[in-house]
Amino acid sequence: MASNMRKGKIPYRTTGVGEYVDETYTLGGFFGDWAHKFRRNNLGHPVSWSDPRLMYSGLDTTALAPSDATDPRGAPLRLLEGDGIAVSVSRRAEAMPFAEKHVDRHQIRFYDRGRWLVETELGALEAEAGDFVVLPRGMIYRETPLEAGGVAWIFETESPVQLAESLWDSVGFVGMFIDYSEMDVPEPAAEDSGGETEVRVLFDGEAHSVVYDFDPCRDVIGWVGDPVVFKMSVWDVPAPGTSRGHLPPPAHAVLWSDDKSFFFNALAFAPWPNTPAPDGSIGAPSHANDYDEVWITHSSAVAPREHLWLLPRTIPHPGFKRPPAYPPNPVEPMREMRINFDTRSTLRWTPEVEQALFDDPVTALYTSFMGVPLKYAPEKVRERAAG
Image (cartoon, rainbow, N blue to C red):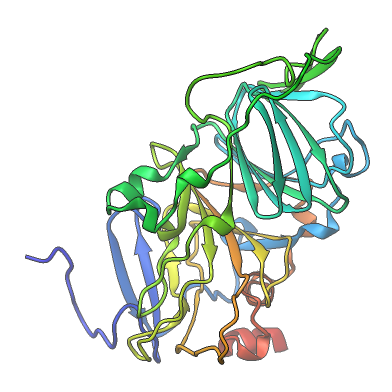
């Protein structure tokens, strides 16, 4: 017997689009039990709320100034934090005059703009826009921007960062999804151990330092073991799609933790669906789950870059679906890429950035996060914007 139940009126397939608002409800992030609801109204469009923490919210990080943008000894600016999780932005303009060792947390460092040299105890990696580097806690590293205007996002987590390989192995033929053999792993190449080096140690939430009479990032001559430090490009991650339309973020999972307390997704523009409405659609439905979601636009023809959004578990995310449309020939590649970090932790904006949040999250979600001109937004959103 099928495990799915059907009750009430099902006006069209869950992948479709029509007069009703469809909303997915999931547990365990996107990995548990679920229900797909067809509603007359969108729960993601409240008219008022008692506490801003209940609402999705976003900001334009170009208006923010991390201290590392002007001070070589500065640090990234922390934007979001929760139990065992933090999200920061870096605009480092000069090389670290120290090496760094994060004892408390593992890191995913996503390089949104620019070119970077990332030196580690195991060797060096060069990163460019679209690359991410995984650094386990306790590993010493040093970061140097190789050109001006660089932007990096840092995701910190207490849970170890794992490849989402077991997820793809469970559906077979993993290479059809993500080919992890495309990762780059550092190799020691320094000819000497360098000179006196300060190591900034991030421990128990504070910054300390130790000094060596050699450079720990130039001292190792060889290593054997697992790829604990590696680099990949989000552009090497395929965009799976269906003939009917949208697939949820787990279909784009690249990294996660063994306990599924977080997952890191790279969402490129999926293939165009060839099933017309009402059974096919483009875009995501409204959805609600028990994880908080962080979203960044890395590349888009319509949505502004360097905007960061928090979609909390307290309210459904409105979604935006429309009938399939087809690109004109000759077909050109679409450089659309969203970075999504989902976590079981409840995230909060830090006091340093709260004042930079968009005034009206309902309208800003369409213009900033989705890149949708208000004239194409749902009627209630247009009415709200008109005052």
